[in-house]
Image (cartoon, rainbow, N blue to C red; front, side):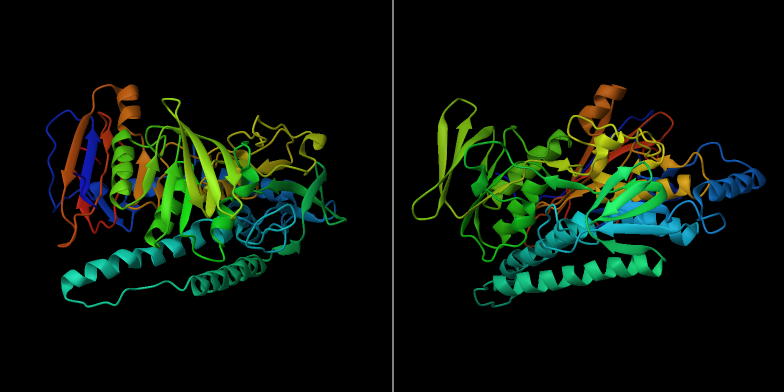
Length: 511
């Protein structure tokens, strides 16, 4: 029987000799600190998802390149006469804001950003400075994660002598406070741009040509255009899909549903399933795979699924949604087909969330008319320097559908500014080892390859697993996977954990 919150530290390595571990390790590179599922390290892990700068030039030659870049892009040291702006960015999400701020503040470019008016639910006419992560993703979701964690704290407190009355949630107050914070953050992002000298234009931007953007009927010209419009949630094309909601809406329900279903076993689905389960809803999770979180380490996936069932979630694995019906009493019924072909009906649902993927925000922007090449999902095709098929137009973030994570969009935005306006002809983003976190219950963090991927790529690997108790009342979970080459270069770390204070990994495993 699974124990809620088991702690397991799991390491996979390829080493020449036996692994040893010393808490007083002289090699700073193998010291690892994990806190609240975020991975940091000194100094070996610090370059994870960093900018690559190949073939560094001499200071003199780099200065010449910098001067030439400033002239060609019309920065503050160059000529603005030909265009209204050096850079015009469409989209004020994480990647667009970072690129625009760096281009203006660090490299003296004349920059403008356009973004649609703020709203809690995105649409073709609504958005807001900050983008998906700040307004309709990471930030509001994590606020709800924090709030939901109190449920277990109330239960655990009894074992420590506290007599706590049966707690209840005032959902309306939670929503009001969460929305107040999002409104504040929207203002913060606009202020960040303003303080960097970036002109903020509210409205929907579309392309006119390779150097012109139109925003609500007014046209602006720019030497360089950056598209950073992100992505949007998509629904499954099944009967009754109009009765389901997407992630924007699950963050803004007027009341706490007594019973809901979540379709999808990825990041978003599992996170919201855990959130609403903690708040007391009866939650059913439906996904087509045997295990959730496809792409993560197999043992991690199994552990998360096991722990979710222990916490009371109803897991419907290897199940395919076929239709949604709305009943006369207003309740919803979700019909699914099991692997063996049998039909199952999940009845009495108040809410159904479709967490079934996202698609790039490239609709109705005149991209193909201008000549920008798109991929099969509508994503903008770019090279390693974020440049599209039109030399003056670039794209970063989820709109390119490469690695759809906020830190990656930030990294790409910095690489773009550094490359186009900073004079570093070799600056580009690196995707080999990107840390990611899933705020499931328990949480999961990962960087590098899974055990399966490492075995396929490198053959013989060693696996190290450790379990330990975190608190007297319960055994919490933290699992790590590490792998190294003969050259002692780390390959991966996978870790479903609640809290790590410090962990020293084997000195000849990670350097």
